[in-house]
Figure 1 (tube, rainbow, N blue to C red):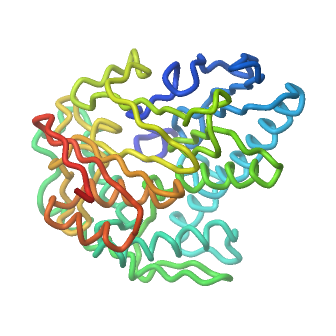
Figure 2 (figure 1 turned 120 degrees about the vertical axis):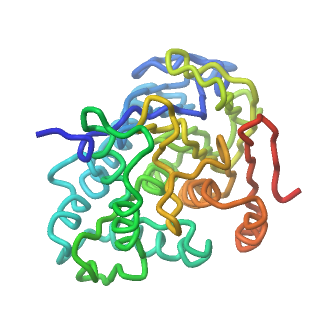
Figure 3 (figure 1 turned 30 degrees about the horizontal axis):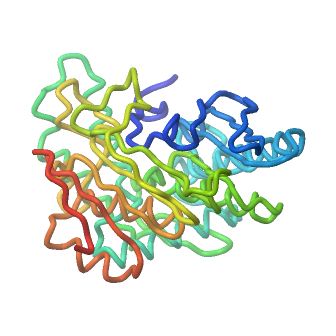
Length: 341
């Protein structure tokens, strides 16, 4: 039976790479040309989010092979990280409370997630899944209280949130307490983006824009200019027109990720979203969106998630631990804060 706990809710994209990114429309395996160089563009879905690959390559057949190779990697990693596939390693871990002989990618990413948790003072915590289950289950019920779950239920779910109670070893992953569960939705899309990018790089590709829910660029657009990414206005995001953008950012050999409450909303009013403050169990509301640029998409993804749930005064200390990383915060009133300043 499909429930709110096992199906992906609508994901509203804040990063748009349509006509802005490459002067191309994103259609499955469409062959286009940019400055005389054939460009192969694939568009689909990965980990429940819109996804695309834009590859500049002189041989269309080779570009198609590389796209197929990339999609094989995505499929492999979905079997590890997806919360929406009953056969995924993550679903089995959450179901049984332990996982023997876990996939190396799961060990690696959970270890990285724990490291981000320590570096952000707990602002990033992959064990917030009990909060997701609580809020999603509450608002799925008929006549749900629009004020949200009762405080007692939030406290009970919050008591299960602590990445330090997650034991990660090469041969075994286990929870220290019953009822714990993990979500990697705040980091897995960045990780998958990185793995696809590194796979293409190993194949000799120097110019590609990878979007597996978060973005990473290698090299540049075939014209010689940087890849250009469009940012939508989170206050006026139009799900029917997700490629409409108001700001552009250039990417060359770098990554970008955005987190915002518009991404998944449990209630019709949009007051309760998928961004949880691990310290309180409440849905974070201090920012409309946080965009992070970093060298890799895993870091950008995790930090955009963490920075979304902290007040402005905590952000500089978090970013100081990651030299070269920049963040763009959108206030509810539309003001923009950029850090480092």
